[in-house]
Image 1: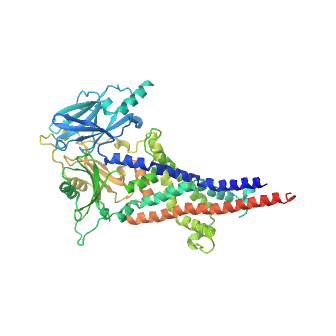
Image 2: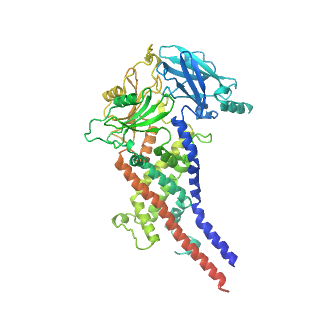
Image 3: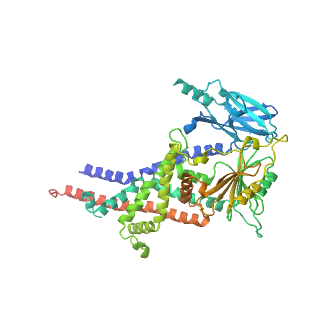
Length: 176
Length: 401
C-alpha cells in the first residue's frame, strides 16, 4: 500500500519535472562559450594572423608571413569540394608595392593559373584554397606575388610544413 | 480542476484543440523560454552596449555641425594609426551611435574604432571578433554551435532554434481557437491581481496573447523561414541568383604603376557616383576594395522598402558602377531572405521599432512562462486529486465498486 503511494509520488514528481528537461539544452551554448570566444578571436584577427604561424619568407624584394587559420584539415564546402584556409601578411614596407598574392597547390604554369587570390588587408590576407582529395602529400604550396609594376615573384612551402593537419587528412582520404 | 478530463475522452472538438494547445509548448517550454529570452535581449543588444559604453555613442557636442564624411573618417585613421588599413566604415544616419571603422594593423591584428561623428575624436577601440552584440545573436540564433562541421553546412543549433517556429505558430492558431471570442479581450481587458497566481497568469496569458497576435505571427513565420533557408542552403540552392558569380574589375582596367599602389577614387567620390546615377540612396556603410580587383561596396537601406539593403559596386579606378542591386534587382529568394531577417530582428526603422520588438519579446517570453505555470498548477492539482481519490479508494475496505 505504502509502496504503491510512494511510486505514485515519485511518478508525480517525474511527471512534473520531465517537462523541465529541455532546459538541459541550455547547457549546450554555455559549455560552448570558451570555444566560441576562441573562434571569434581567430576570425577577428585579434590573435594575429592565425592559429598557427608557418613562417616568414623573402620573395624577391618583399617579405611575406604565412599562417594556418586553424590547425585543421580542409573542410568540405558543398559543391566547391574541400577547402583549406591560410592567411598571409606582407611586411609594412612592401604592402603598398604588391598588387596581389595568389596561392595554389603545385607550381603554376602562368599568372592565369596562379590560384586563389588573397582577400583583405595586406596585413591579413585570407586564402580559401581548394584541396583535391588526390593531392600528393609531397605537394608544395606556391605563392605568386604580383607587383603593381607588373613584376612577378614566387615562393613555396612544402604542404607538410604548411599544414600537417592537411597531410593527415590526405593520408586518411587516400587510404580509403 | 476536474480530474475526469483525464479519464473521459474529450467530447467537444474544442477540447482537443485545448489539449493540443496545452501540449505544444509544455514539453519544450524551458528551451523555448531561453530562446525567447535571448532573442529579446538580441533585439536591443546594440542599445545595451550603448548604455554601458559611452565610446560607442554619438556624443554630439554643444554646437552640432555636419557629420564627418567617409573620407574624413579615413583621414582620422591615417592620422591616429599611420600604416593601418581601413576595411569598412559604418556611418549610422540620424542615430545615437558613433561611426565605426574596421581597421587592420601591420601586426595582423584588427580593431573596430569608434569615432565621434561630429568631432572626429577616436572615442574607443575594440578587438574585432568577440563582441556582446554578436555573442547574443549567436547564442540566440544557433546556440554557439559552429557552422559547417561536416554534418550540416549551417549550424546544427540553427535548426534546433528555428524549428521552434512551428510549435509557436501552432500555439498561436490553437490558442485563438480555444479562446472563444478572443476579440472581446481587446474591448474588456482583464488582469486580476487579487485572485491568486493561477488566475493572474491565466489572465496575463490571454491578454498578452491577443495583443501579440501580429508579433507572434511574424516571429514564428520568419523562424520557420530561417529553417527553410538553411535547408535550401544545404541542398545548394543559390540565394543571389544570377549575380552569384562575384563581380571583379577586369585586369586591363587595373592600372600598372611603378610607384606602388595607384591612387584610387575616394569613398566619397564613389558615393557621389552612386548618388549621381541613382536617387534616394543614403549610404550607411562602405566596404573598401578587398583586392586589387575589388570594388567599393556602398550599402544603404532602401527608402522605398526599408526591409532591404541596397548595394552598389563602384570601380575604384574608373568610378563606374559595375553592379547595382536596388530592391527590384534582387532575385526573389534574396529579397525574401533579407525581408524575413529584417522582420525577425525589427532592425529596419530605428530605436523606436526595436523598443516595440523588445516589449513584445518580453511579453512572449513571459507567455512561455505563464503557459507553463498554468499547465503546472492545473495538471499538478488534477494529478494530486486523482491520486488522492485512488488512495482513499484503496484504503477504505470494500470502498471500491
